[in-house]
Length: 238
Image (cartoon, rainbow, N blue to C red):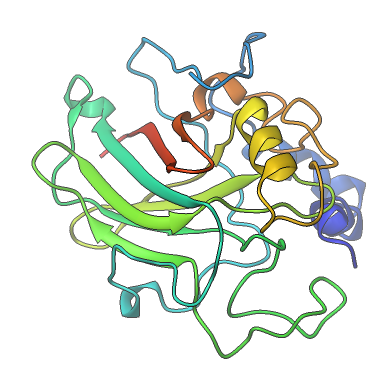
């Protein structure tokens, strides 16, 4: 099964009577307005919880075993520093210290670690754990990871998955981070490490970001030669 059909076929298998309540329960918290998909990104000025998204078909199996800020392992690609700040909507959007933040994303070729050898991902990476990591927010609500600029796979715009937990391990939010199209175009068209060309799905066509891009689009600065820095704010209700 193609990854882009994963959600569609799962809902179809439930039947019409089950689909309606399921869809209603999974509606986004925010409907995005039409925003410019550029390097600077956009974010909401109001203290509103970031949209909840699917963890996808490739969540980390045991995230507690991957406490590291350098998640590259043996993966090559344009360097990417990932800075994520967690705010608490239940405390006037003050920074949330001691929150646990897990992230995961695909490599430059669009493959995930911990999975593979199936129709959804032919390359078998079931025994390795690259591009997955966990950190705890500091007093400013910040976590940082050292990674590479992710590639893409058919049917999805480039993205990073994020799962935020409270300090006691209770799940607060699963969401995703979108990438500005202009930066993706630069990386995929100029770096010799990325051989697939430009992504086949834009943020506006993506089934995750199409209605929530304003609150999930990261700010990215840098260059292919120097590497990039991603900055993103996620608001949870803790």
